[in-house]
Length: 379
Ligand code: PMP
Ligand code: GLN
Image (cartoon, rainbow, N blue to C red; front, side, top):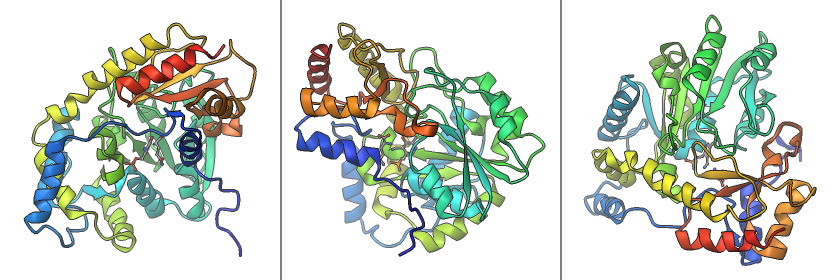
């Protein structure tokens, strides 16, 4: 048969989690918490089921939830999205990203992707006949170079995808960087797809600058978010996207034939749960403690870290330990030592390797301590 994705490889997240399981390794690879979501939230879902919210929801999601999302974004970023026309509740951010790409990318269109990048973007572009145009973020620190993006813009450029806070680097775009992007896109008809799933996980002095906060970005932006990341329930696959009405109208055409709507009782639960802003604003302190704990624990290892500014990932540089390729080293760490991570090269343009591994610290203290004990033995 002719494949639409002939070179597609199984997601590194599935590969590493499977290997971790097979070798009974401490799993800091795939990004998900190993602690529970709030019992109150589970009860809200259960109660919504008992209360009879078990049939189709409206395509864009239930109004009370869209209202909460609109209020949240307005209070955080000062931009008021219309709850009736500019918000859609989706099956996780992955579906939101897929909807946006499918709605706008035509055969032969170019989409600029900043590498390293989350692994769903490029296959989604290709499935729609689009051409990913890759721009590598610079060096070991993955710095944004707007000039380089500018050089890659052509008459065929349909979309630019950004991700802040950034998986896997843990970088957060500054206000100046967002303004540079704003200036770059001004006068073009390029759509901005802004993946902001880690919006509430930011550390130290960092601030999350959403594309929705910049008028010359928000007018062309589809912003994607994930409840799974924010409320410790990645398995529920719930999220949303926001965009100006004329863009959202196109997204709805795809949504209608794709899933029509997403899980109704869970929407009822989130509509209630979001009424308490502390439920998402508290995430920052919660994960700051985890990040600090992880950094403290690995201080006496041969791994080197530049503290993550956002996300629940920490990159560790192992160049003082070995010259092995990161894919080989990450496999050896699982097999010989019993700790699983993600090799960063798989996300890089040309799979270039900076001798860095990504560790997920959304784990219980006990798990982080176990992992650190193992990492201390790696020399
Ligand atoms: N974007 C990024 C950058 C991610 O790391 C993830 C991972 N989970 C997603 C999107 C997908 O989010 P969801 O699980 O809500 O589909
Ligand atoms: N985003 C998660 C990560 O970066 C994984 C999501 C997935 O497994 N598809 O680890």
